[in-house]
Length: 351
Image (tube, rainbow, N blue to C red; front, side, top):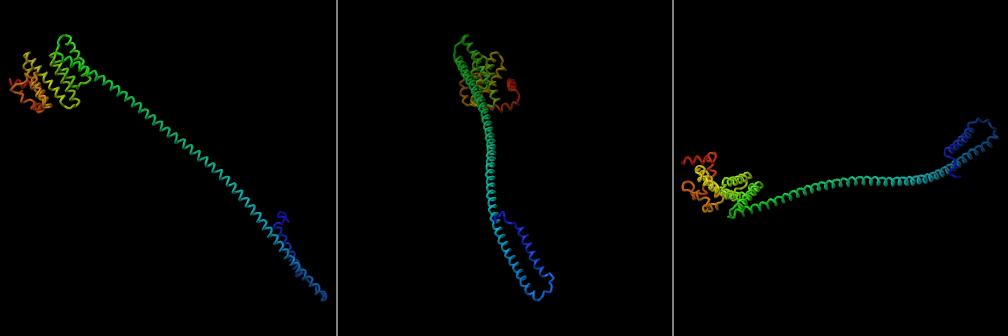
């Protein structure tokens, strides 16, 4: 009998139950049935066959039960074996499906990760490129600005070079026409031209000592002592405005101004302006004192300079006193009033 044609367990149990009930009914029917009083002759003979039938039935039933139990056990073994095969197939199929699903998920995850990494990488690269472009643009602007500044500085340097070249040319020309002792309209015109060129340089270099001294000497050559004094005064004022150190260059300016003031005093005395002459000599004396205090080498030069021959006297402008006057203390004692007024007042008191 094949497994598919075997009776099911409920049907087997139903058959077993029917047989048990039938056998029990037969047994209890024999016991419970009202028995007639058999004749003594018949009772022993009938009792033996009935007892034999009951035992046979029980034996047959036991044999049947054993057979059924054996068949059921075999059925259970076959069913269990089929169940094992079925579960094995299910497990294998499930494992294969899960493995396939797992592989597919890894691919998808890998693809997603790669996609995200690519997106992130593209974003990072784009950001870095943007920053690099901004850096290049900033550097380009800085380079352009530096180039413009460099060009501007170079242009200024070229302009300064041209200015210094013109200055050197003008100073050389002025020194040349000043050094020449020749006279005549041609040389006078050349010296006037030199003065104009020096005036132009003074507008560019208002604190320049060389241009001021040469221009002052040219004014002196024409007897224009007042103009010479003004040139040197403006140059010293410009140096003071710029807080330049009062060094030997400043002393040279003072020395030359003292010369021109004393010359102007001589001219004033010739014109019978004794007050003006005295005031100019006092100013020349103070300038010369300051020049010697700044640069003591000017003292020996002043003693040998013919421009100061009329400056010395034995009363208040002795040569031995040169450089010993404290100009700051002198001005402080003057009460801060105008120096010219103080000199005129002192002159009036002495006369």
